Image (tube, rainbow, N blue to C red; front, top):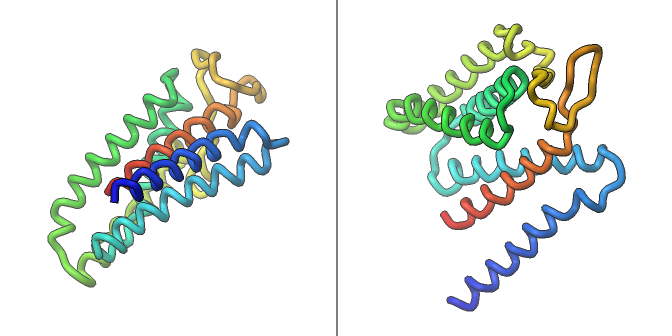
Length: 187
């Protein structure tokens, strides 16, 4: 049993090193962008696997919490000169608190009632994301413009406004993917 556990840890360390080193060998941003989306969707799939597979809960509001975390980190990063690592942590804490407040009464429901309640919450958040155009960009999405105080980020000047380049945020997402995979494997 101990030998098998050490083998799993070794395999995971090799996987983590491969994931963290791949971007250094890629030429161009297209493949890196594809890998970032693969990492994001992998995190979503692992979360759904925990909820549906291991917990056996049929819940459909998973995307709402993902959207809240994305919009919180995107909006705060673009409007305030704060370190992106800190914002990702704070967004996760905020979404976790909201999930606790929403989930505490909803998780007392069973079966189809739980599915309908979480589906309703997902639809409510979808409407909020689309109607708050000033904050989220509505159906067009949110462009991440940085403030003038965020000069230490990798930025491109775009008509007097700065837009974040992907290298620093890709490093954040890669490290976040490896960390979450470690946590999920230990559950």
